[in-house]
Image (cartoon, rainbow, N blue to C red):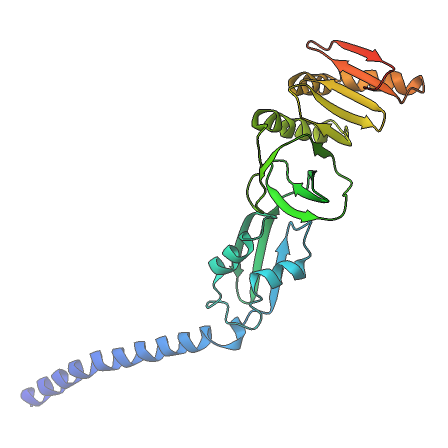
Length: 249
């Protein structure tokens, strides 16, 4: 009797690992079937922070993952596809279970145009070439440069490197101080910045930037406006020194 009981216990122990293995296999198969079910198909693609491109355009450029299983969507591939566009500064693509892909972008901002032949090169505030266009956009024109290379997605290469770099800083300060120069001529160390067609600001980029930040240039413009003066040349020196001439050279 004792021998029969021990034999039954041995057979039971031999069966238990097999049963546990089968249970694990069934559970894994169930999880796999669940994860690959239509419950995890992509039903929504959301785009955040876009301004230049529409959400539809961004999704098309990324490669729409609609109705794909969310776990098989290659988010890195979508990100890399978008980063090939010069307007994309940073891109993040992430999954939000069970069925949403979220694309967060930081786009480069059109800051200035550079005339070239009969076209215009559009650049951002870092000097990155965004595109070429036939249209003269309502942006500051940068003139007087000798262009060496203008490849989309790369910095505009010019011979006047130092003055160009300072002019880009000037454009940034222009945005911060709510001023607008319609045209900036950087052909010399001393730049000419058109405030109006016949009202010009002349000085080094450093002095013009300092006068903008101090508010001195704004005060001069306010005084001229009150006197109904919209023609002449404002010479900007260091330490907020200004001289005005009614002549435009």
